[in-house]
Image (tube, rainbow, N blue to C red; front, side, top):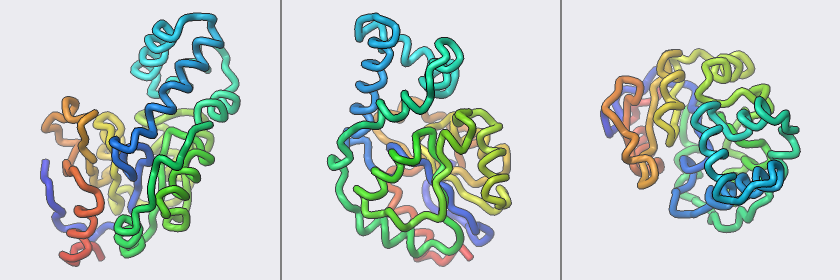
Length: 227
């Protein structure tokens, strides 16, 4: 694993995860979603919040997302779930003009690949001031509700947006979500933070491990490494 940018001259497609990647964990946005998810499960199954939390995390680890587990085990309407859990306050995020500048400066295509909904992604991007920085958002609906890290999600993403994975780079805060990207030939960048630090292992599918997305992208641009 490497920290700084190396030769990225072959990169023409920049792929970004959304939550806890484009904004810091310290923004405390995702805890709102977490609470909404366990509340949804508690009401659906008639259990206490503590039990709902256990179910939520079990489904996440087994199926990639809580939603996928609920669909398989309880035939939950995915749209009802997504609408409920993403009804949150995005204003805890603040505009990030420095990140906007570097993303705008990246040569090539810029795409979002998220296990969340497009509505949620739009809310996040609007709050960050990045609403017009990306060509497209590939959300969980576009992936037919099959989440990362299922390889079929990446295959559908690549097919939908017609890019060569070996000319792409992916930024993620989930170690396991970078493995299928690396297997397709993408350069992979793990955005490390206090919530995922324990999961970091010197594995070949994490080509770079960074702490500050904006600074790393700025180094790449300043070094004139991308084409």
